[in-house]
Image (cartoon, rainbow, N blue to C red; front, side):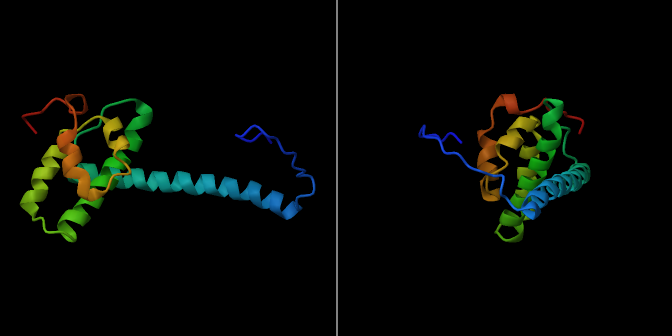
Length: 140
């Protein structure tokens, strides 16, 4: 094994117990399956939420759309919990934030904010650039 500091060390893995080898192989497969199931459940919840609250379709590369939808859903629900349920906001304040969130249609923007705290969402929405905003639909 070559380390970052440029020294190398040889490791003999031939004497690793068979049960540990088998556990790792079986475990990584079950983790992959678990993660795929979890992502599918999150995606289903995000799509249902977006439909219920009239959120626009996100724009971007096909690979980013699902991740963006899940990120938007998670950040919006975290913000609602922090600001309305546990905070001091009323529904009118939340409706204003929701309208700002609807204007952000670039999936990448939501992905970039995925680790943000829900209480920061208003500031993040205000700081979003024009490239992050979709074309406004006056007939919505």
